[in-house]
Picture 1: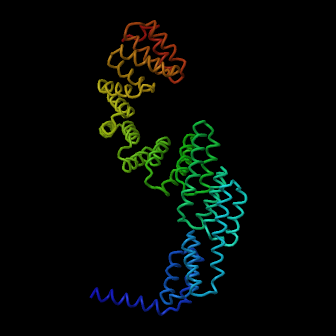
Picture 2: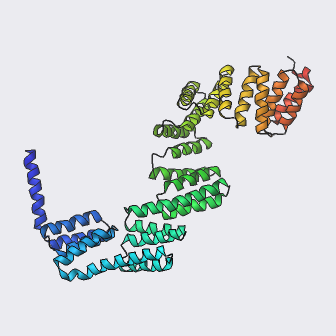
Length: 432
C-alpha cells in the first residue's frame, strides 16, 4: 500500500511538472529570483529545462541566478549553453565576458597599486549588474589593501546583503570586524571606554550579528555600572549565540551586582551546563550559596571546582571563606594557604589567611600573611588590622598599636582599628 502511494505521488509530481509549460515555469522562477528566493528559483528554471532542455531563456535565467550567487564560472557555462541553444542570446554571453574583463583589469590594477582605477572597473560591473556580489567583494579587497578598514567592511557587508551565503565576503567581513573588536579591546584596557564603545558599535554597524561586539559592550557597560544596558547587550548575544558560556557567566555577575541572587545562580548554572569546566562560574556559585548560608551546597560546589581545576586559587579561597563562616578555622587556614600558594599577587587571599591564623592563635603565621597583604596593598586597612592583632597575640602592644594606626587611615576599617587602640590604651574598660 505504502509503495503504491509513493508511486502515485511520483507520477503525480512528474505529470504536474510536464503539465506546466516552460514559459510559465520561467516566469515563476524569475518572480522567485527577484524576491531573493534563489533556491526555489533554481528549481523552477531546472523544471523548465526538464520540459524543454533547449529552452534558452531558462539557461540564461540560470546564468543570471549564478551571478546572484557570485559564481561567475557557472554563470559563464549557462550563458554559453544559452547561445548554443539560441544565437539571439549572444549579447548576454558578451555581458558575462565583460564582467570577466573588468575583474581581470581591476585585479591587475590592485597588483599595481592603482586602487582608484581598480574601483572604477568594479563599479562598472555594479552599474551593469547591481545584484552581482563579487563586485562589492572585490571593492572590499581593494579597500583592505589600502588599509581602509571601514571601506572594506562596508563593501564586504554590501556583498553579503546581496548574497548572504557568500563565503569569501563573510570571511573578509569577519576579518575586518575582528580588527574593530581588537582595537576596541585595546582602548578598553587603556581605560578609554568611549573609544572602545565606538569601535564595538562600528563592528556592529557592518555586521549586526557579530555577537562578540555585543558581548564586549555588555562587559563595558557593566564596568561603568550600567547594569540595565549591560544586560540588554548580553541578552542580544544569547539571541545570536545561545551557547556562549561567557555571556551566561557575565549576565550572572550583572544580576549578582544588582542583588538578584536567584537570577545570578540560574545564569551561573547555565554557564556550567554549557562548559562543565568553567571554574569562575563554580567559584561565584559557591560564594552565593555561602552568602545564602546554604553551606552544604556551597561546599559541594567548591569541592567540585578544586577537583576539576586544582590550580584555581579562587576556588580554594572561596572554600576557605566558607569554613571561616562556619568557624572551622583549621580547614579555612588549610584552603587559604593553598590559595596563596597558587596566587601570590592577591592581597585579599593573604588577608583572609591572616584572619584564619589569628582565630587559631597562630600569630607568627598570621603576621607573615598580614605583612604580605600590606606589602601588596599598602593602603588596605584590613591587612594592617590583622597585622596588629597578630602582634597583640605575640604580646607586642607597641607594634600592634602602630599597625592599628595604619588601619585607621582606611575609613572602612577605622572604627575597628580605633576600638583596638582604645582597648590598648584603656585595658580596664574591656576587662570582664
